Length: 270
Ligand code: 1GP
Image 1 (cartoon, protein in one colour):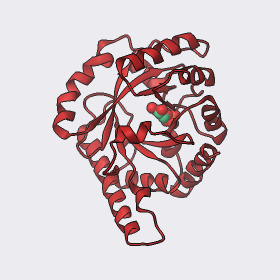
Image 2 (cartoon, helix red, strand yellow; image 1 turned 30 degrees about the vertical axis):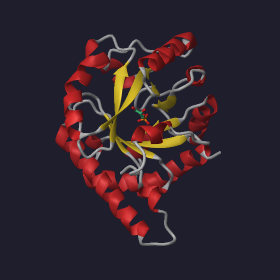
Image 3 (spheres, protein in one colour; image 1 turned 180 degrees about the vertical axis):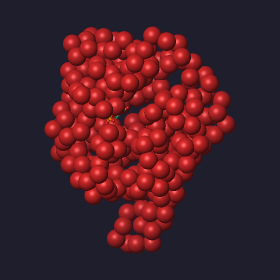
Image 4 (cartoon, helix red, strand yellow; image 1 turned 135 degrees about the vertical axis):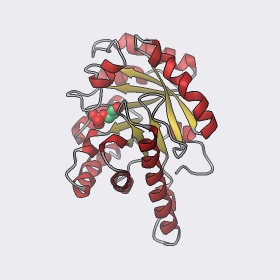
């Protein structure tokens, strides 16, 4: 649930001293109750946003149930915090944002959506096709669009394959710069550098540094980040936001998840 007095885009692009953390929850990987429990642990450990999405073929209904369960859990926690002078209600005013694989994974229960152009795709479908299919639904739902340039870097994983991306290689810094400029000129506010979920190697810090030189974009980095050391590389290179997903999915239990996310967030808080 987002704060009533700001849009999610204002929240995402607001100045922050520290790099912030996003927990990605893939609705295909657990039931909605487990998803809500994981999201609560993530927020308790300092995650500043929840992404819901990832898999390419999850039905709308599954995505919707997951968004609803997370929102309800956050609302209850916010209410409980409002009754307790020791607690901070605003801790639970965390946006739940769709991170869709296409026009099928939408839900009116989300606060916003990363409305993405997969900029280095070779297929019209991911440049603008899925977006055209999804836009009328989002308009009807009143889900806020976060204009996002999405760039898949090597190794790229499944999103690189499905999205038919011409993967950005670690030495292609001039190309990343040109993409970042293009993103800004299109009016995108977010520039997401993706290595692919579960990637063996994360986005090369050189690419993040070069994207960072373009003003006016919030730089989101994800794919293959599992350890505080890896998170630190992305932070030092200038990421505004770091996304982790697999780290949540393969945690044995909520306690292990707590340790993992706390370890990453500690690095971001420097
Ligand atoms: C995938 O960037 C995200 O879209 C997160 O990747 O699952 O490797 O953390 P991981």
